[in-house]
Length: 533
Image (tube, rainbow, N blue to C red; front, side, top):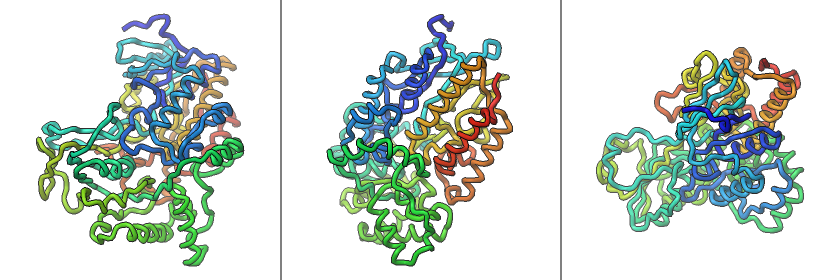
């Protein structure tokens, strides 16, 4: 395991999804010698692996796209309001080719470790091909939802049928025709996949641990007229995006749910229901913070579901007991209607729990279900999972995994004390999953690029996060989260879906504009909270 002269780079990036591609482009444009490693066979990141039936973005296509190139904006035309996985993947392939990024990317390559050498002040990066690379800058662009999670079910190895995980779906076609299928989980991927699988399967059992709130996406084709309209005012739309808490969707209503009478409240909910998707949370400003306001949203959704699901017992099972928005709300097309089908059955953990797998199916506390295939829609080890898979070692032999044993600690979600010249794109402590990911990615990549330029221009060797600044930021992130209802239930924002993971609220919930203002002020004050050497 020796370093070759050709293995020395200015910057090494891990991941070739939205974040990795733009970071590679940014460094290349700045004249840096950059190397990017990608575990997959092609670009795409999340959209390379998540190709399950019905996989689709819950942010509108034009918003979930890069804004750094006006030429790219004009030449790419989206076909739907909410893009499906194949279209997003083709978009990212187009980006990689247009900006000639592939020559900088090594595919089918996993980074196994990254160690900071205090003598050379460089990072030493090892891959599964047993090669070692060095770089001044080390950037993790591995995403927030890319480390798949399969709970440790007893007897899973005994099952002789097919198994799939929505986050690591085969690249070959999968057929469920004439098969009895079990889907485990009722989060976003299940809510998207279930209606599609149900149309094909002989019988479908949906194993539900906790039900989730879902709002109809109201997806539709993008007409040429609508597409041309968007293209004609892209810059204006992008500027408006940056003023929104989610950096996407429609402008939220700044009224309280109790500033209006019952009729107006109902009309407002109807308006946001018609808009569809995640915008519904913006119907009133106090839905995320006031339990009573949240209850009005809950009541409205339940009344909508009553019109779809006529079986009262089934409706009870599908209605969550947590606040709307506490778990990330889902955006669906025909999810609830699927349970009216004769070939679909909901198995609710409040009635019967999964005991174990058998060679032919799943045994619950009530009975055994014979299955030909099982789909694990069991989510991810969010925010930190992909970082934990790489042995990242900073100064004085400090391992990132050990440092984060009680929960992730970062400054602005982009750096962590004790790890010089180490950057995380949309890491814990940034808006990340609580805002438009692409806007968050562009913001972080631009910040990292400017920071590296500042370092090089001034002849510095390193930039490092100060411990006090990090501790203050972590406290601020949790203080803001505790003002909301998002900490009142088990969710992957807190890491509650992973046994043994510390319960810490990981994303910054203050909204993208406030976060961007804080970051700007820090830079203008001479990178307050960072030390240069």
